[in-house]
Image (tube, rainbow, N blue to C red):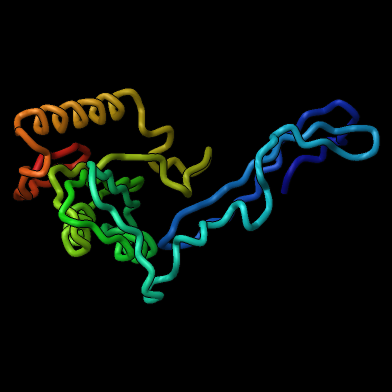
Length: 200
């Protein structure tokens, strides 16, 4: 598998190793290189060591007792959907959060057929760690397994999707402007609708 072309001096190529893990998603690192007379020169200019490409030390496995605190402002919490639920690794990391009743906007991204209970589960997780959800939305993004042969939400979000995202943001802004203080906003009932953002 791959190309049989012979690399010659002054060619520019892209090297894109990828890792795809069930229940987590996919990761791909890309380097663009210039072929020289005796090797190659990287044109990308970004970190490429294993340490630079993994999660920072502040993200610890569940059960270590370390938390990430949120004390003020509005927080946006996003999570990928796996089999209709919040992806397990995302749920573990969210449980490391600790909030002091601050408002949060919840977003789940799904790339296959349906988000099922993921948004409702994300709301429960957010409340569990101390957030006060004020809005939630489910939006389509290209599935990590999608390629030219397997079209799974390929090239999504498209312009219609982005328009829905903008409308969602505008509704949240309008809701916030209707209260004297964002701290007075209350958690409401979640009405789930496929492919849309919903205000709680």
